[in-house]
Length: 63
Image 1 (cartoon, one colour):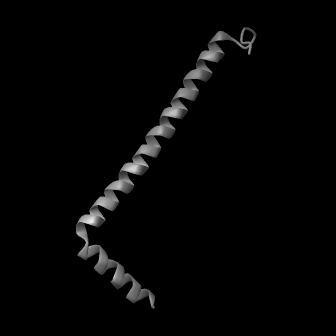
Image 2 (cartoon, rainbow, N blue to C red):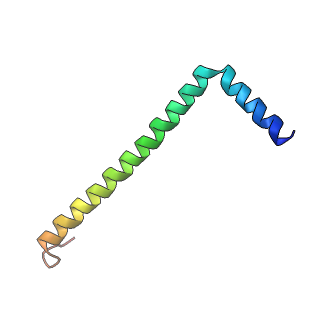
Image 3 (tube, one colour):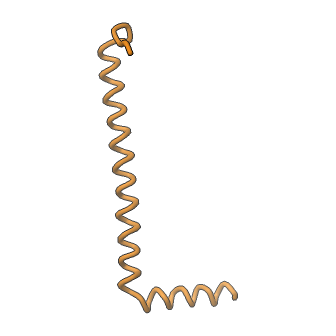
């Protein structure tokens, strides 16, 4: 199958199944957004903890 035929077939499938295409796109957007939010929260928490540890001082921090 040639590239042009493959693209035509793909576009036809997307156009034929509009609801499925929209729901798939929506799922991808929600998934990427969720990953970005979680990574941002983790980085923010790490920064917060680092600042608190630096404020306490390295001499008084025992594990």
